[in-house]
Image (spheres, rainbow, N blue to C red):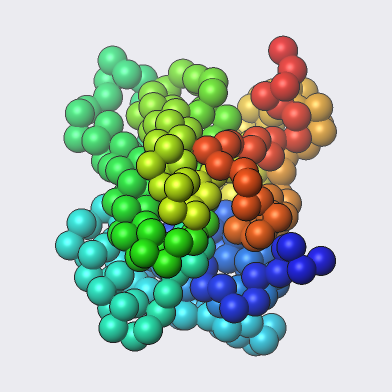
Length: 253
């Protein structure tokens, strides 16, 4: 299955010291890619790298804050200086903040937008500045069911993830002629640390299971196949799309 083989490729996965980001990084590594784990805590990154290296994977770590413009630029300058070419970028870093809009402070709104949307533009731009001269590259942005649908109390997250869908299309429109494919994944409700409180809520847990044709929450590792597809030559003529890996939730009333 050489179409899905990522040997010889290097993938930067933002926000990958745990949760979905770590699952994405592990999946890409298992497909043969060298992975660069990213987060703000060097110790947590080192801890996350250990099991991947123990499994025989080639792993690097890069501690920088995706919301810090200077830090992002400096990180890519270091990649250049070290001869590290980023062939695959997976923009995963994100946060959640739940509060009704009438009580929502502008600072909290901006923090979510900057972390979940602007950072994908910021890191994507720096990656594309290297991909365009090479004439190839893969950018995978992480959207959500809220790229299409809204829920009460998560307005900034909803707006950011809706923006991810359109940012992905904008990237495809501008960079497609340079051999870059930009696509997105929209996960459904997944078993992650971010969702612990929701999983523990019997009413919400029952709602997710009744609303999802699969009748269960998704597991982070179940997203890896979609990421491998979008990172590989198998998707070379797929551009500007968002694939929902949600157990069928978005397809039903």
